[in-house]
Amino acid sequence: MQVTRDTFDEVMVPNYNPAALVPVKGEGSRVWDQDGNEYIDFAGGIAVNVLGHCHPELVAALKEQGEKLWHLSNVFTNEPALRLAKKLTNATFAERVYFANSGAEANEAALKLARRYAIEHFGEEKNQIISFNQGFHGRTFFTVTVGGQAAYSDGFGPKPGAIQHVDYNDLSALEAIMSDKTCAVMMEPLQGEGGIISPTQEFVEGVRALCDKHNALLIFDEVQSGVGRTGHLYAYMGLGVTPDILTSAKALGGGFPIGAMLTTAKIAASLKPGTHGSTYGGNPLACAVAERALDIVNQPEVLEGVFRKEQLFRDGLQAINDKYHVFDEVRGKGLLLGCALNEKYKGRARDFLNAATQHKLMCLIAGANVVRFAPSLVIPDADIKQGLERFELAVAQVVGE
Ligand SMILES: *Cc1c(COP(=O)(O)O)cnc(C)c1O
Image 1 (cartoon, rainbow, N blue to C red):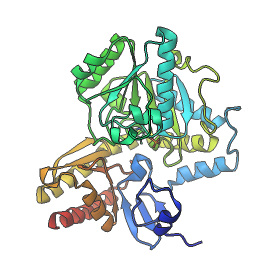
Image 2: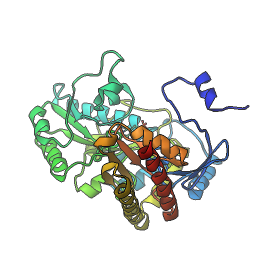
Image 3: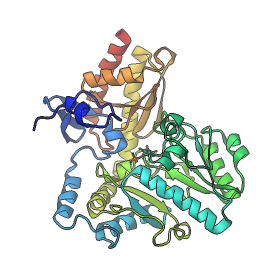
Image 4: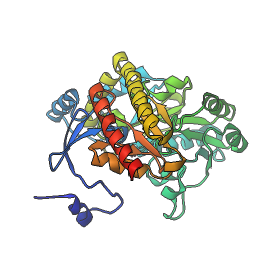
């Protein structure tokens, strides 16, 4: 059957507006479309393809598990899920893991757990959830409401209640609305979708202290920042601030859908049998791939490589900017970088992305003012160099328009 981009408009719900090309194959940090055009991938499937496309070890893990056992439901546990949970608890602060299929689901579990825990230990009144403007936590109704972009949560009728937002990096605003009724504070330890915004050290430490003061749980949404993306296995490790609950997805499966919520044994105890669940959560195929991805990413040479590659990106982007003067700054950490457009190009991130696509480079945006890169953590240096050459052509094109 012949399908093209036009087929999308005929048969798909129009909630997405995908690019004109239809990719058919990927290998490492290269992708090919239906017409045989080759692209360099600086988008990484939105911070997912942490080891590039079709990494041989991930393909092997998938094939191996694919010939053994695909699915059981949570009526049974399975070896890949148990091994992955062991490795995640060994590598982090956490003692207990809940598996889901996506970032939103991991966050949904985290929020439900936080509410349960607070109600169980402190009573019904302790139900306030605080999160941050421009934050992003997924698209279920609870997570999108906790997310800080009204455009995503408005227009669907009554929202889940007791959720309040303050500005990121504004500690006194948080302090002003926090009380013993606060059940949890949810934040990204590096805001991704909201524009690649790092927290100040003072802010994250202050949030932790306020949570401790009010017996509120601190939830770090590491769906985008986790699994090596910042050069640390999880971003909290680089910040030196430990959350009570951490969520992981995107890069966790290296492209296979999986999410996880990590927490302590004490907090986890509030999700007793029957309180929460998912048919596919902890699926053996997903966990087998994620286990292999974690094994590879969580090696010093891979994590150190992230910092080295970050520098290649920063140097290259700086050289482009010295020539064309389009960014105010290059921000972010590791291989989650954002070029914040200056006054002259404000609101035009999409134009840069479209120009990049024309020059056979895949990149991302984060809002209207930031061009975002989230490539594979093992992208070859030569691909970074060639990709940046293509990006320069794209920048030159937008500047010349
Ligand atoms: C992408 C993202 C999510 C949502 O993950 P899905 O897998 O799309 O549900 C949640 N939080 C953050 C920080 C994200 O970047």
